[in-house]
Length: 252
Image (tube, rainbow, N blue to C red; front, side):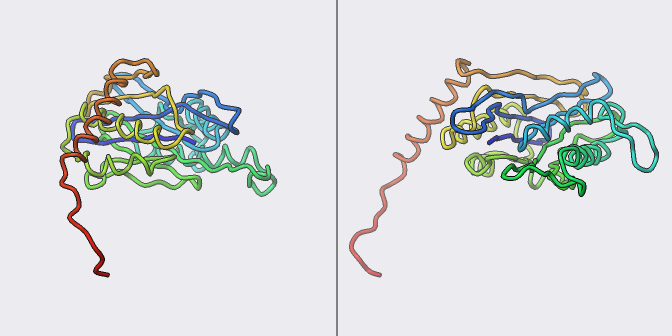
């Protein structure tokens, strides 16, 4: 399982992904799920992936090497697409192609008992265009993040979603967005052992066209350790500060 989220605020974009993957309780490994494509001053694209690892790694290779456009015949990669919408469409084609390469004559994945479903987050900015964030599904279709719903999640998202719902808004400071995203990740890891460290993070300011932060947070990272302890303490203090329920007896 996986947890990745992208948070789009006025100042820029934050992407966060865990690195745990498993094929059973006794086969747990670490794999990168957040990929960066950058040409400073021209474009920055960030891709987070959830789902079948062979499919998602195939997608990353395809969009990096390039795919021939079915109509124009031009080989397109994330480093030469004209805008973010075209980049999202390219990722969608790569998903379909990667899945078909593992499939039968009809292009459907042939292995029984194995899920070949994937979901991906693609965010970034290309010079001359806006900063955008998309979610791409197994079928290759996509939806776009908006100021009204300014974050997207993939993987095991239910534990971290309430925190983002309550704390993140479009006007949130970008480093506060990163902090809230890390709290969301911590809450997910506490409730689901299939999501785990290290955590990859990336931060891109709007119109900067150069990544400001790209790092991996390990289990001994002092800031993240303090964040976990501070959040747990704040929750305990908050619930203790709320008056006890006044209900007594039976009236139903």
